[in-house]
Image (tube, rainbow, N blue to C red; front, side, top):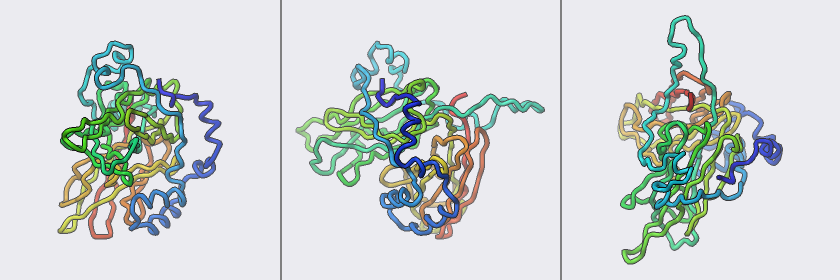
Length: 363
């Protein structure tokens, strides 16, 4: 069981500590506008530091003790073992989840004319913002491959956050050590329980050497013992290094699914960047970022963007979508159901329609 699981009462006491006043102050739209206009051409890494200084986005994560690896959770045992947790999380199933996002964007309970009942509520959800690699030693640029996947109680199938074969490794170094994450296929429910499956390896530099196991193990997060609503930094240690997770477990959250449709695009196309951040909880989502996200950022023609993005957003909060070029971000208020669409005008003449669909992750 994960050492990340602490009591909610302890969590409340710690929330009153450092940066508490900054985190509790909602963002003012005029402050946001002044900020984005002043940093329109700043690189993402530097922009992140400026956002924290100017807006408190994101708040400084709190360091929790290292994550406890479940017994018999190496890649050779996790899928064939007979321990209780192997059965609970259906580890013998290696398929990706078939459940889509936006399952409850339209409330079926309100489909009958004259009936206005709705039994959906915000639910606990997991959001992993980033993962970084720590190697025991840096011989120089290193190629890594493997997978990180989440299994939740909706169907206990894999929701991939990282998935690269040995033939398609990711190169990292001491200056760029993020794993480029996929947007989850759907919202990750923390209703009851949740498991994170990690198998990351480093590719041998020569044909004579063997690949090294960087991190190989699983850890679980249990709703009844989770620390909610605190941005946390936790470390999963392995044989030759560690994986550092920046994550949060929301108590009352909804799923935001973001689609884009480009209405106008310059003749030679252009690269886009896109982040999201929230007004009250001040979480930062790197949706399209060459360093942290597995996403093709080049837009060549009009039409729907090939990828969609899923994020867990705290209920009663507002999600800003920022294309990081100095114009005012567009905002969307979190809701249990529904879809809202807004148009954004780029400085280069491009136009995009951004649609955000809201749903619960659990019925």
